[in-house]
Amino acid sequence: MEAVRLVQSGWSVRAVARHFGFTHSAVVKWVARAKLLHHNSQFLPTRSSRPDHHPNEIDLEIVKQILELRSERSQCAEILHHRLGTERNIVVSLSTVKRILKRYGISKYSKWKKWHQYPERPMPEKPGWLVEIDAVHEGIPAERLSAYALIDVCSRWAYAEPALAVNCRATSSFMRTAREQAPFSFKTIQTDHGSEFAKWFTKITIHDGLEHRHTRVRTPTDNAHVERFIQTLQKECLHRIPRTMEAWQKEIPEFIQYYNTERPHMGLNFKTPMEIIKAVPSY
Image (cartoon, rainbow, N blue to C red; front, top):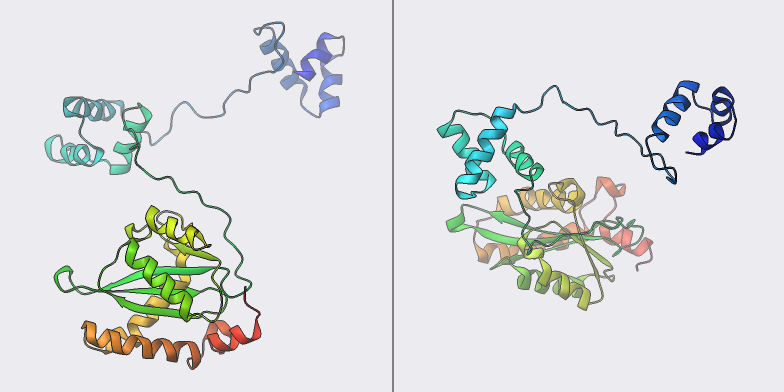
């Protein structure tokens, strides 16, 4: 709009173009568009560069079929996706169905859904600044055993214990036990979006003076350290002993003691977590 005003004040189009560093044809187009606006307009609306069509866009007939099925019983996207394939032989992805419903304003998010914020990930410069927690499950559902695992990203100090149940209350109890066992203070707890790390656990964490940070959805690499520790726990301990609660209660503490005080870590230049903790002042 500044370029348009200069042209209207008597500047030549080419002089304005050189002044702002744009081509003269762009200035000509701006002046033509400004004539269509109100004379008191302060800005020249920017035209979207979004293409009108995509080469791989969904056929309008398929969109029509999805909307027709939706209008019948207001069924969810998963059922619509299934019905498209079984009733009408239309092959599209589930995400496509969800995207079409959202585009036409039909799909609404639940008012009960909790939206997570993703603050900047703290740098684990000292022990306790970033502690990752996750749960591990072994066996079929009818015979499943579970355990909690925790690791400090800076020192790789780890803690684990079997769990009779995996829920927010059990997670809070595990976290408090780990804080008692740890030779340093915790500052930030990082978890995924599992039900055992839901709002109730967040409230307990904040009440205890800690910060609770969630990983991004469908991004397990955000919790890579605890995921790798769980793999080590499984290979070097759980898969070598009977899958019973008695065996886990006996062997896991012994493995944790070995892991923190004796086992060399390649990521720590073949030092142990306790050696790192003694070398780096904690929070």
